[in-house]
Amino acid sequence: MAVSGEKMSKSLGNFITIRDFLRTHSPRVLRLMVLKSHYRSPIDYSENAIRQTEQELRRLDEFTEKLAKLKSRKDGVQANLMKIQIAKTKGAFDAAMEDDFNTPKALAAIFALVHRGNSLLAKNEMRTAAAKEMREFLAETDGFLQFIFWGKQRKEKIPEEILRLAKERGKYRRRKDWQKADEIRKQISVLGYRIEDTAGGHEIKKN
Image (cartoon, rainbow, N blue to C red; front, side):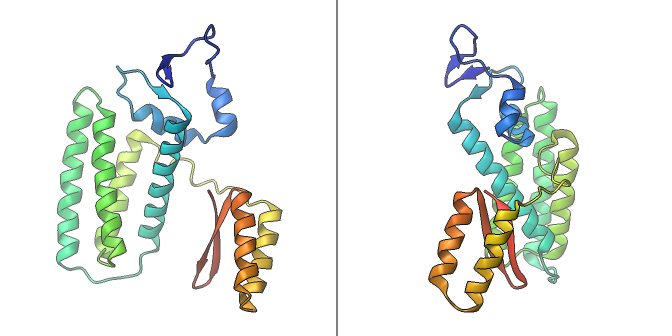
């Protein structure tokens, strides 16, 4: 493992244990960082690499949540095209895994599919059948990689202070005091959470 381009070593004072890493970061971050490097190549450990990996996981989580919440839509041309794309991605994934367990190449295929799926969701062109098939494909690949859905079954408990602020913000929104509501939203963000307004109220997520 390399730390910001230098070999990790106790003598250089840049040594970190897995236990130390997991005190401040999710196990999913570590797993994805490992998978992004070929097993024959060193892993580059840096704050920038950690932030980038966290952003990739956040985008992936948001994508899978949107797929799960997608309301029923009739299939059409886009649905068929998406199914073809999923089949191509599956082929690329299998080929990468057979190529000396080339996980970086396998991940590139998955993230390219996610990018395409996000594009369809943004245009309201994702169809229910395609969304279901995509989730099934991601779950299948996650059987090997174990970072997409792994650990998400255990929902993190939202701190009482965050819940209190969210409730208070809701009161100001009902009064149409948008300025005060936005101030509280910023307070929540500083504390490491974000609040997303929905038709049924709001959702609180960790940044």
